[in-house]
Image (cartoon, rainbow, N blue to C red; front, top):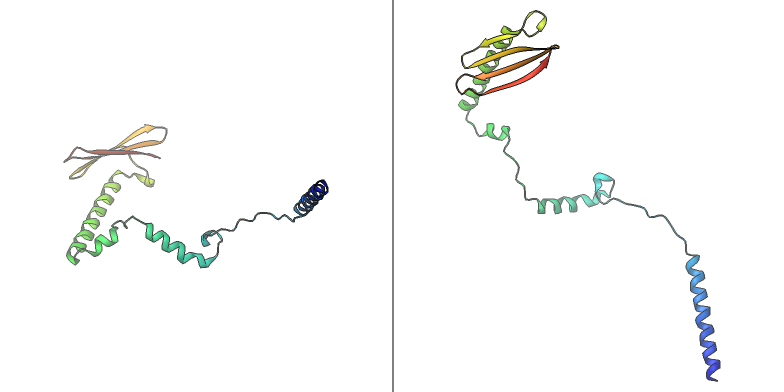
Length: 148
C-alpha cells in the first residue's frame, strides 16, 4: 500500500511538472517597450511638475550676476557715464581703424599710435597680417592674425 501511494504521488508530481512546463512554454511574450519619464523626451506631461520640483530642491547653484542686473543697480548718472565712455571708445576705434585701412577696405602694414595704444600691423606673407596692440601705460600687448 505504501508503494502504491508513493507511485501515485510520483505520478501526480510528474503530471504537475508536465502541465507547468506546457503552460510556461505557451505563455505569450511581447517586446519590452521603453517609455520615457521626462516630458522633454516624450514622457507623460503630468510628470513635469514633480521632476521640476525635485530638480529645484536639489539645486545648489546660484544664478550668476549678469550685466543687465549690474546695470539695473547703477544710478542714471553712472549709466550715462558708461554710455558716454563706450561712445568715445567707439569713435577712437573708428579713427584708428580708418587710419590703418587703405583703399578697398584693406589693412595697410605699418604702425599707428594713439594716446595710450600702439597698433602695429605686420605683413607675415601669404596674405596674412599680424596685428599687435600694445598699451603704452602698462606695456601689456595682445595680437591676432587676419587673412587679407
